[in-house]
Length: 98
Image 1 (cartoon, helix red, strand yellow):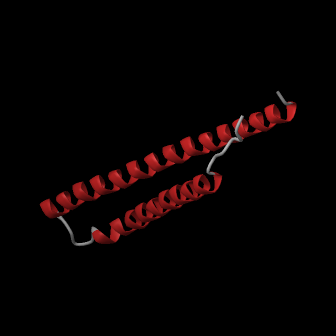
Image 2 (cartoon, helix red, strand yellow):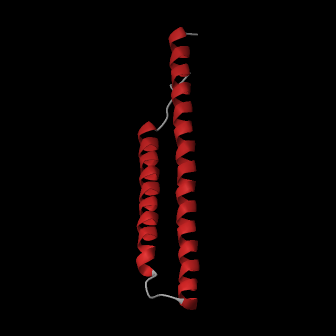
């Protein structure tokens, strides 16, 4: 029987990249949310309403993407944990012999 192989380093790099991107997206959302009050000064009527709708839609899309990244990161963490269990089981089976 062959040894169990899993790309742990690549999986960890992908997980770190997903977590970093989700955190950066949340930072962009917070920064833009904080700036919204300033953007509203002397900004009324249909132009402001359209801006608010577009802004809300953009923030919602960024938030949805961050949630998707969180879900993908959770799934990858689960996959890594399963790989560790399978690897441990494989080593135990190899140690016990045929």
